Length: 304
Length: 294
Image 1 (spheres, helix red, strand yellow):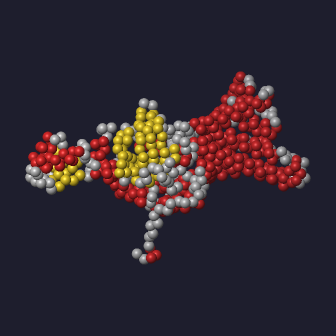
Image 2: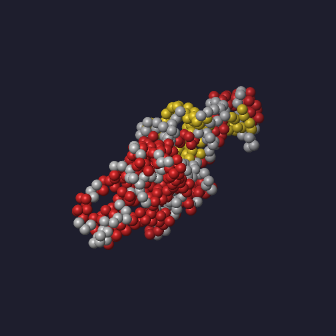
Image 3: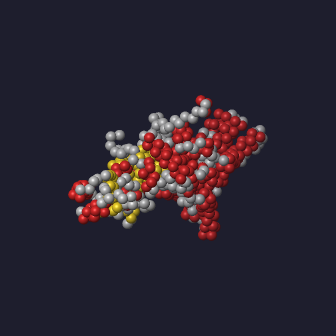
């Protein structure tokens, strides 16, 4: 596949007066992609648009080169989907459910049963796979949901809040599974409001706020572009802070004597260097502070 | 750890085998619905009733053959407990089967929100309806045809003039029964599934199916008794509609036991109501499973 894994151009979805997705334009490449936003930001609506389960009000979206509006079944053939809500038939076993959904995805019967067995091994569902689902714990149900999403070997698997309802141990296990999917060459689009989950496993991030894309890019780049630099000079930190303030650079002295400067643009880095040189201060350290996705989101979302 | 106790993590293997499209998905849903309806891979409680009803439906055929065998050398050898025409649709077991099975194959999918997984596959709402309708229709055809086959083959074997003579003398049965059975199955399957699609509760759906058919029959009777019989009164009886159509297949007209036979154009009215019920039922189903807004 030469083009991007996902391409959205001006994608919009309105429900009456409510705009759930607003002019989304983005190219997403294979990998582990985090789709973050608060509840109601448009994540689930975006998934439904990718699956062709709802028609966009405007714009278009392609999955692996397939225009979803023209060929929704073709798009869905390339996708796996793990919904957030309960969605498993409780009177059947995981082995039966995963095999059945493999057949529904087009696998021959024997291949579906074989794949179901392999995928249930992968997600760590052992002898419990032969028991009815209504006796499963939340973690076992989440693993079963993930297994049915993977059984047909999709190019991209859509995970909607996969760690919802899990205890810390279960959450770590699920995130470890998600990370391994990326290692196996399966692209993942992980929708969650938990930025820590995304920071832990995703190498790309898309942030939605009120249906709009507020930021997207490589996770590490976004973290490094936190906009905060740490400066260490000699004991004349206060002098430097005051001088920077006069030049429009907001800075403060931290508890350990360093200086933390918040940059609004890259040119202010040059300003810092100039001020230090003008004051004749010895520069011991000048580094970018690696922030968190929370910082990135809080910085970007209000501007949108 | 010894070699015998070694654990292998095989990781993930991509699938490189054949992958069917929508047709394969519809066929898979059809098979899954058949399995569910017959209780396969489910506790024995879910197996018991469908197979009991099949047994009940087949009893009259077996008894008729037995009586024919016993009386073959007596003056009453032509006595029939039941004939092919009446056997189509007369059994309340079929009605109970629809009221039991149609809700069971639809309601849980909506109640447990399984539909979101089903429609994440390359299946449209129309595909879902087609698979469910085909599965329930197939079972009704099978449950209706099996007793007829028992009856026909049994009668062939006990006929004093020989099996070939019976076959040539009753050759028309070989097409009338299947046609009438298919029409009956389509009616019950579409109506039963349409009513089941309107609720998430199996008990409510089953009661609705039985209630609509039985109450319409009672209402038709009351209207006929109080205001005098009329074509419209007779056509209200949804329980009798497939039996009118059955009579048209077997006899070319509605049997005189039904009040509708007294009116000119009764046959056309019956066919019209039949088509209307089936069309309305399928429309309801397609509307309820219009998953995409397209």
